[in-house]
Length: 269
Image (cartoon, rainbow, N blue to C red):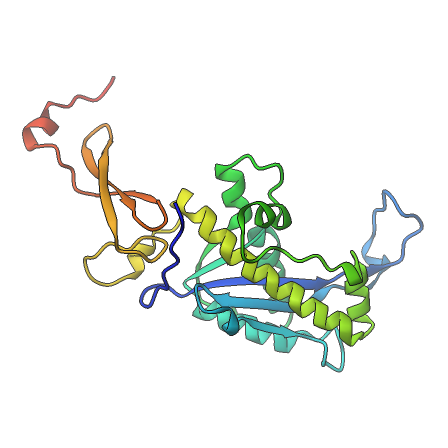
């Protein structure tokens, strides 16, 4: 079933975000099996750039900021201020491998630069969704977007292959910075398309909680459902629903068993 992407005009502010970081520069004696101590670090890591987008906004509204014009490439305060503002506005944040990397890296740079925590938000990590529900050959963004996405896929930066793009950016190469911007933005655009493919399989965040009124709202923003059978528990029977647009399943919280039926149920001993 094709996914109809409906913009949530009311409800949660859902942010997609991706960061690129500068590597640690260290003195080493060999290429393999290195145990780098703190006094071998010549220059620590920082954030080079970020791209972000509010879920289902048009691609023209994608956001990007980097340190290419900073006097000191290690000074990422302006980038951090922009990230902090977006996180503070968000109710839900979507990322790829963000729970173990992006979010912790952002937090580390924020506290080191004197920022207080942004307001709390729910976090959906597409890498964890993939590991939880599927057995893909790879859970990397490049693999999943290549197999599942039709409009946006993670970019390859062939002109600046591998680490070369990062080293060229750190050397101040304008062309490399333009490639970094496109690469970073495509990570977010492909992440958004991937999210719409994966989220019908998951129920980690109940988006309906963020909407006023008594009309149920699916995680894709739809209000159109069909009744499809029953969900049974040890104590009741609940109406089951399927979203017409994304195919996600949900159920009512109303127990349809009669009082007499409920009283006839016995717990196992």
